[in-house]
Image (cartoon, rainbow, N blue to C red; front, top):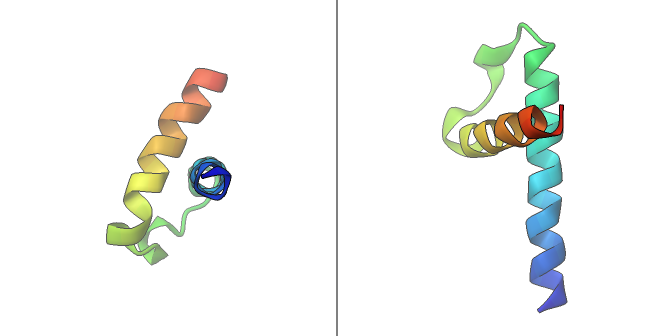
Length: 51
């Protein structure tokens, strides 16, 4: 049970990092949209709440 919780928060953290990277990068076309877009959008929302 705890492992799934840690995995969930790990995905959240990676989403935030990914969104921060993309927001400061011009190489957005290089990402794999089907895989990265959900994490990017969640990370973007999460970081906007934090800031």
